[in-house]
Length: 293
Image (cartoon, rainbow, N blue to C red; front, side, top):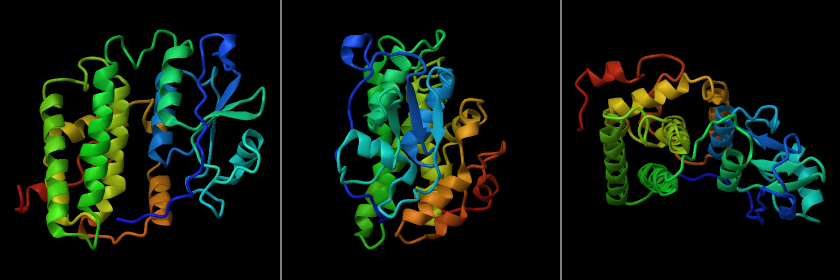
């Protein structure tokens, strides 16, 4: 799978601190998020923002699903980038956490933004990083990136060694199998409470069905559907009031087709989940004598 990517440029990695000495104290109404939820990092931040109830304390501006600048950035973000770095060389990409008092960017690094939102602002008792779960949340993050995202991308990459694609698909299926076993006996990944790990996994599953699936063959996609607890969990979260408003399926499709240069495969026609409904999209197909296992 091949996609066009914006030219690499320096990222902004300041952090919101607990007091004024940090330069960016956690002051309500001082900062603003700029997000395009058609992208996975922005979608994670948008869902987290809603789960934490930060609409008033940390306002959010939504950007077009498809970046509108020739370099792959957002025209609306260019002034912020220019104010933050003279003659900034790269595209003005989202996500952006901006300081409204100075008109400069605090951070474009999604993991830092996510942690600072959940740990430093008053969230009315809502917690997505419960005490003692940091290592487990980080482990889920690695599992999502390596076992699902990277594996699915390699499995659908045209023009590569078939054996390498088969190995990648096997990695993807093993990862889904491990998640299936975990979710068969727990409501959420870390137990009875929804955490940042669930937000990351849900966004990863959305990407698997709405982006990576387009480059897999039909037999591979049917094998992905054979994890009922995983996809039931994904649909359940999709109906949650903090998740549902940010799931822009049309926007994800537009963004993917605007950027992707890979070859569409037969699996593109087999949706794994009806994200707006209650029944897996491939349920009927699963009972019609599919091959593979």
